[in-house]
Length: 352
Ligand SMILES: NC(=O)c1ccc[n+]([C@@H]2O[C@H](COP(=O)([O-])OP(=O)(O)OC[C@H]3O[C@@H](n4cnc5c(N)ncnc54)[C@H](O)[C@@H]3O)[C@@H](O)[C@H]2O)c1
Image 1 (tube, helix red, strand yellow):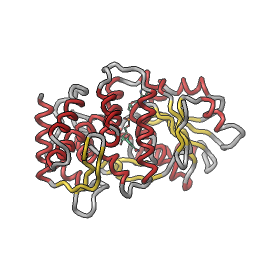
Image 2 (cartoon, helix red, strand yellow):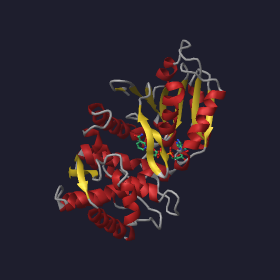
Image 3 (cartoon, helix red, strand yellow):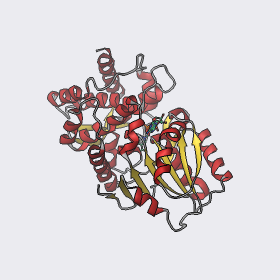
Image 4 (spheres, protein in one colour):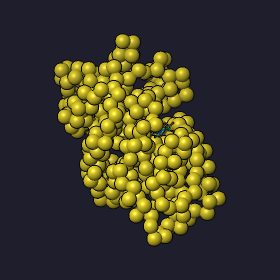
């Protein structure tokens, strides 16, 4: 399958040969692979079978709770003990958490060492590994501390998905629905038509990567158009942060799905999409997820997160909303009463 080239790096598909080539000739003083306990168990053995270079490893605990300053500090300490230097290479082998925190650790260690991403979840293959957003959660707020920096390459191997739990696979589909909803109605329709046990992800991942690449290349540091990728994320991130330590712990894609429903509702209420388009979206997403019981939807608590959203300007909460199925616009102001109404819609939706 053809690689996808961006201005600064290439995204390779199912290409162990290129991965081996990239590290030939003693180019790096050392190669270190960052994993969590799950990718160490399920993905590292596959990688080992296919590469011909030596490496050290750093293993961290899995999950969003560990995308933290404490884990970041542990990674820096491990890099120091392994005697990594600026000419070393860090390979992030894992989902979005590994990619975000590993990329951030590499970009800041000794003012920056080289890294590559090998995403192992559906969500990180189609979204998190691409676009250079790196960072950690801080003071309970998602991705509050971070920077933009790119890996030198991304290698996508859909075979890693074989061990991914079903709930995580479904979570990944959320960002694919989003890519369709903001940029490509045909892709959205092909995504919602999939059977629940769909197995062959390669073509669909490729399409999502193309959409994300196109949007990011036009606006790498999110000054404008890239904000459309945040559709569903103003309310979705607030729900994710608020429910992080509750009984209804939502996965990223689950929170973003609820955020997309809420923000589609706002798009409809603001007259940006028709009732027919709104119903198409709700029908499309319906029955795709079994959400945990007891999701906290408290408007005042949600507002404390929405006001801290990085897309805001001053006191105004700015969201990216749909102006059609397959098209999105950004910097649309939303206010507390509208968010409250959207949350009521979510509450009814979850009761169904
Ligand atoms: N940087 C970005 O642009 C961007 C975009 C979207 C999401 N994100 C971030 O990504 C994170 C979510 O990523 P995620 O959904 O990949 O979660 P994750 O990294 O927590 O991975 C999900 C779970 O799957 C396990 N796992 C990963 N690959 C596996 C495999 N092949 N087999 C078995 N188990 C495997 C992990 O150990 C973990 O338990 C969030 O922190 C979110 O903020 C970042």
